[in-house]
Length: 115
Image 1 (tube, rainbow, N blue to C red):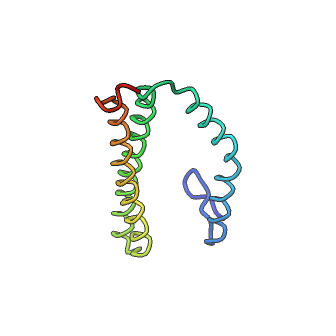
Image 2: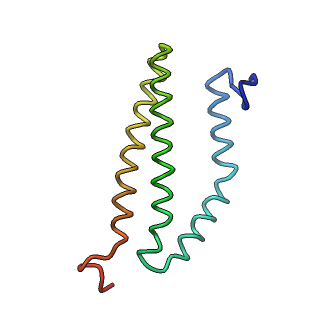
């Protein structure tokens, strides 16, 4: 492990897996509880909108970040890395579309207005 910029760069895939797992699982319970409590406070479909719009914005930023990383990886000749980033970018693009559709679905239609 060595310091690169403002963070650590790990020298093995195993170390990267371990830090990703640690970062994910150390905060799992708190994150799940926080989001469950927030979701429990939603009272109608409109209440979903602010969070979905914010999530869409965060995903859009993530898409741009991944696109930039992909371009740079290709420029540097790291084809396997670029391929993984391209796949991740596609998944984020799909998530963007689904979240946008979900945000639009918060507006009641004639079919859902009676609920």
